[in-house]
Length: 559
Image 1 (cartoon, rainbow, N blue to C red):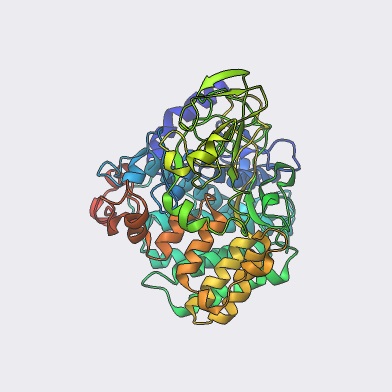
Image 2: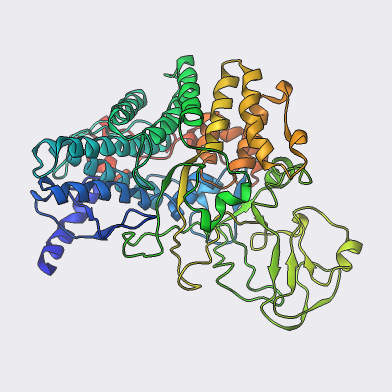
């Protein structure tokens, strides 16, 4: 086995540079209730996928490659950095995505990684689809299901790529080695292929997922809602796309066993990972071997440096503070408003940090008192999220950090992804599932599609259920809006409130053609440099360099 592995590694670099691999899969281990389990295998014979086990292992592997992007730092950087809701914290090597500086180019690691890993996923899907007919030991229905899942995954891989890069190498057959005769397929044709794959997959998938993390008709309709509402905003889209987004979104809401949870906080409760609001999620596990070595790392990125503060040290319950992202003033002051009525600030942010030491300590940010005296377990820091007078802060036996005190190391902490169940305080990989679509997202997408079709009154009926759920008990009526507020400007803020930090914002802003405008308005770091060419990421330069005719695979404008 060692010699096989070495042979594979010798050639893997060349294949990866092209974003292509022969049939290299992650083989399934024992099943797990909450995750698609995988064990990495270095190399496979060309015939392995033609067996029943090899075919099923390949399908499982195709799901596993979603984890190379989702819930990793690359996903955080490309989906949240450089938006109106979050700006940079103190740490991290990818601030160029927030600053929009000239070194954000085709040589960037994340630009290259997303391209490479998702073309690996696409090639795995192509192998499954192309070889299914010759697989022995499986019934026709089992092959049909595997092909449907592969088409759904291929569509999702391409949808992720096309939103970031635009035109792509649209490859729908298996590549068994490096290919250099490549040209870019235009963005419109890529969307056509995505929609075709999703529709063909939906015909052969079960109504509801056979296990958490598997595709179903419900998930497909959720993604078709997203694809059509996104295509509608491109120059090749049409008003019919909004109508289709409306239709698919309404189907998800009305035709499946999904419902909004009664309490917003329950969405992020680790005991409630698989819940009736989830439409599609990428599965993770605390058994890191069975999860292919990946883990959900988003607990790291929104956390401030709390462990250097008076009376405090690092604890598993809170986590490792990597300080990548901090909320903008827009998030505090315009998104998270009406906090006496709307619970989403209190249920999204960590407001209290408890002392881990006993003693008297000089204060740090809150200078309303010279020192604090705390015992282990006492409140050491309170972060209300709004300004408080010095006199009021002085009455408190702990420090009160308000937004005017925040800096790149200490800031409001989005708590949705904290994961105290990791094995150790230094373990970066968590086991929380990562939601790609949840029902509230669909409600707001339907509302958006309706507003774009001038059906503003009907849109109210899809915004208000989300807002009523977010209300503190007894304040539901105060949270409802009327038709005068059913506008795109209101919806942009409402999606920020409901989905803050969940990985939608960059693609939302791009879809609305508001990325440049809103970064200039609300992100002081990104404002000086961002311009229209940043609506797309650069094509990896190594991809352009390795094609026979570079003019057939041009770099995106501005890079």
